[in-house]
Length: 247
Image (cartoon, rainbow, N blue to C red; front, side, top):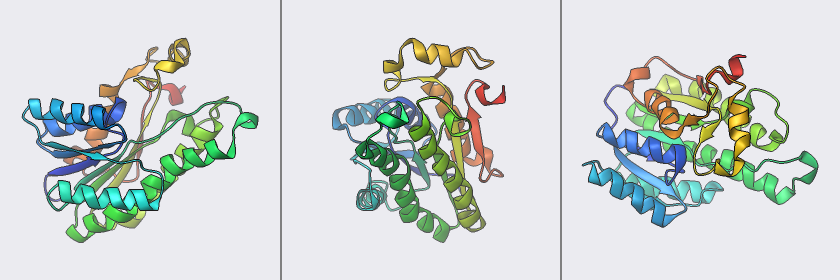
């Protein structure tokens, strides 16, 4: 990016990794549009950021298709004062389970949220960034997009698609000044993964770190890729998984 970023849209920002990312970006002086489905939690994030003298606004958005994505993009541009410099695609759902027990409804919901919404957000915002010659997009994938895992076929496949899109978008928009990268989290302790219980810790013991990560640790990497500290990085998928895919 040729100029320091001043605005960001973070989806899935009302909890977990998205929330931590929104708070960290705001701490760097970036005006953050906090997007999510839960208005109560969204306003709490905004209040937290503003209490620390940051700038933030809440955008209620249930992202699942072209219409909802493009509407959210347009509303975010208005809330941010006319431009979005950073897009973080953090919204996602992750139902786990056997392939034979997956319904078509669940299949469609996972790909609609994890792939289609991100695709059309990029379609709406990346060309605007390219017109200005600067911008950064960070997608959130997962370590199980890199290897087979029992019960995670659907979730892993959706995030693997997002990983390939990351590289394709880097090739498409990088020459116009828009950097596109991704972060691949491993086992991370958040509100959403609390239902995994001991299974989360068991998964984490398979990596060198031997423990689950925190939302802030994942957000550190996202903010790195979203800002000028990573100005020469394009099309990368940065594993932040305690070393799990390295062993």
